Image (tube, rainbow, N blue to C red; front, side, top):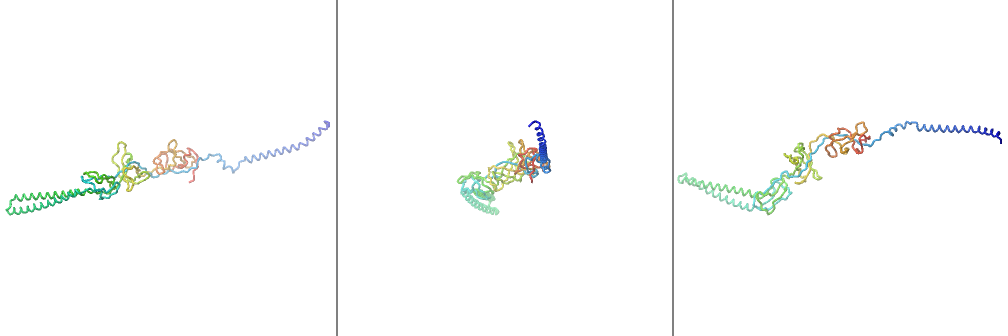
Length: 385
């Protein structure tokens, strides 16, 4: 094939390939348009996605916390003092008669006695013998007096008739007076012996609790020797030592909570000692214990003297946290979503509550729990009441 024959053939092939290239461009254009339409569909803003846009870009609350308002309530602040239990009045009973042997001791330490009960009996044989002698002396003195009085009557009759001298009458009157004096002395001696005989039996002067027994059977008493001790009426009291600055708010009759170990006993103030101990500036408050308190003399106990109630801002102790060693709470103002750290000055703690003396007002809302995980300015969600 020569060159002239080849050129017409190439021209024919070129004309045949043009429609194929046009179709390729059309397909490519359609694909590009479809891609643009798909991209526009994905990027076009949708109304349904609008409400979720702020949540996706806004801050998230740190915690959901419960709130509690600070409230004003009457608060009774106790004055605390420690001390020992002692008898209200301890009677020291002694032997009034000396030289007698102890026959019987009817009580032991810890016994409750009533007024008039026999406590101790002494051997009264010697006193009874003395009583018999005194009775004989009385009879003798009475006979002597009777004789002397009869002699006086006789002498008076003679003197009135002029028979007997006046001097004899006076002598007989003197003898009668002496006999009368001896009789009176014998009667007084009988009363003394009777009193000593009664003292040989020791009786309880009042109701009480035997706190100590000194005399023992067989011992010989000395006059005035201690026999036993008796707590009058069985009444005990706690002598609580209280700082002098606290005494001004204490008065007789105030209720007192006495604590001994795990026990709690309700009592009341009986009296306040009129003096202060200079060494420690403490005063003594006498707290009357109720019957059956179960305490014994010498035991150590604590007294919480309840004063008059006063208004105070109170919070649950669980709401208080410590920041840099100081007590604080987190508050949330109405309409706010971020908590604020508030430092406080605390007072008394009582039964799960704490007194706020400074830093918080009545009605302010405080985070009740979870405050330990918060910081000042944290966003929180309020728990449903």
